[in-house]
Length: 492
Image 1 (cartoon, rainbow, N blue to C red):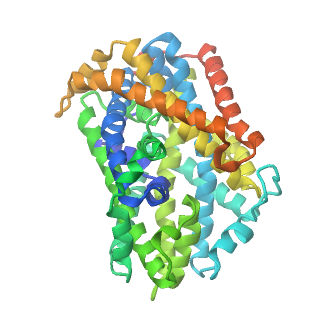
Image 2 (cartoon, one colour; image 1 turned 90 degrees about the vertical axis):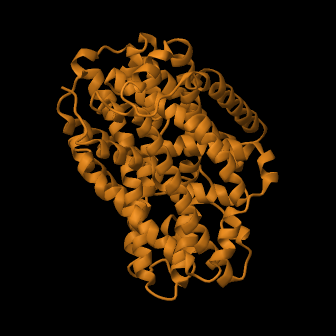
Image 3 (cartoon, rainbow, N blue to C red; image 1 turned 30 degrees about the vertical axis):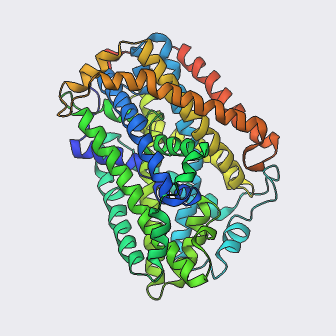
């Protein structure tokens, strides 16, 4: 008998928790910041309604109908489609490995906040003392013990959260989803009361329409929607497979998508109001404040916390506690999707063995990211997984299910118990609108990488992004051909 969620609210909160993560607090505000503030909101919401929500409905309906994780669900849609499920899980698990390292940074900074250990020069502390960053990706250097310890704590927490699958997750998410919302609301209120907040909010909400002519704005909008909604990871397929038969798939998709985007927008209010305060205190323009996503969380925000007129340590602890709780459910959902694929394929009943085995392997691989060059490699792998991996998965998903499977059966299935019914417009989006958008973006990104390496990294370092994708593709084909218990009847 397949495991089930304790309730519909548990499923919604778990999926929201998977969707809402560190990216909502630093990646979304940073991309807004980078592309002229309010201008980014337009392509972001276009991407949400033209691709994000339709693809979420597609993955929910597939997982729920087939009652299986991504590989087995795709196999049920066609024997030769199983590889795509494995490819999605390999991309997801590669992200989980470096995501856990960033979570380890957050654990470290949570304890640093009690004494504001980062001092006045937060940039020097982050790059030189905490990371002790090397000069190039190929100057690997030694493992940083403090980061390694944070990584270990993170994996212990992840394993604890998914120990019994949906049953454990159903209990944990009431803390890991609701608590960060409360803390985020506190930061919004606090940010709005700071001097200079209006200047930051004006930059955030005033659209610079000329930015809409930049291809990068649109590419980042679609990448952010996919990354943020957990589309293409296999998570949505696995999570929906634990739903009871009579489930409102379409309404759930709209609730989860809008909750995720609402959180991103709320995070933008919190971040930009405090950036306005930083700009006011430092006497520099808002556009000159932030240089990168991680710098927003580990350099700019600690500096702002130092400048707060009162309760700096409390707000510092709350900020990094928020990052920890936001990140932990995104991290364990990536792992849970992989474990669901493994248990479905080989019928392994002792889940705790898979949990611990994967955590040990992921921890050992993650040690590479705790070295002095770790930040470089995180940046490179993240770019290739989000800009190519997820885009390729979503494109292939549309082709395999839109043209090589009777898409109307999935539409009929998700309409069966849904209050909001989807019509043939959904088929049109999956078959004719989303694929060309994704194909153009992939081709344009490839052209850009041919013209110049990503962020000026050495070609040899950038090559590892391509190598990983090739390895994942070959491995997914091998896994598809391996024999397993893979019986859908046992999962239903």
